[in-house]
Image (cartoon, rainbow over all chains, first blue to last red; front, top):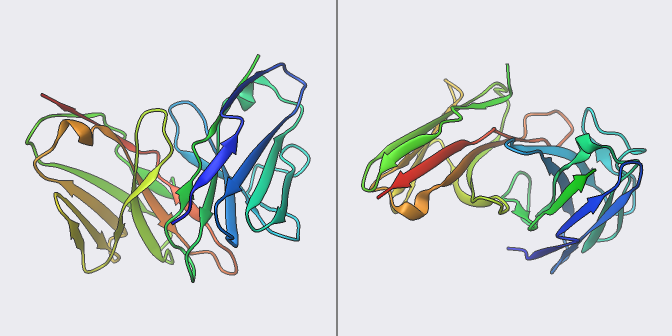
Length: 116
Length: 112
């Protein structure tokens, strides 16, 4: 299993500004992901955070808008840049600590972002 | 067509009822399947993995039908604490890549 913390837990931001969300895991993991969950919706994968290389973004998400850092195997950040009200959402970090592919994912508690 | 489709519900059932959720997926190359539970304002947590042979965990039974690309979750003897959103999750199926798809979730309300 894995225990994940995220900071901040929530924030209210003005449009045009940027927010960086931190994700810390209690063990070293290879696979770390960032998701978005808009109100009343399910989770949408933004990107896979790769340690030592650029993140792998899903269709509809770009590095300029959602830059991601992964400096080591226990930590990652997601920045939401030049925010607009449409970016209001819950942002969740998750990890797959298992061996092999396609295992259970463990999620952080999420960051609730409101953009005014 | 969505890659993973679920009946959004909500399902309103009395305590003690049996309730079944269905999920279909579009990519026949998908490799692993899960049900997650998400409580209001909380993160999703794994409820159970789903295998072709079917698996049972207490009051919960999950089934996978690869031929029909269909996954189910059965909850027997519903408890008030079962009220949550149940997410169908499908992994894999992309050549050379990792892809996890979450269904939109089925909301369950169990009432006394």
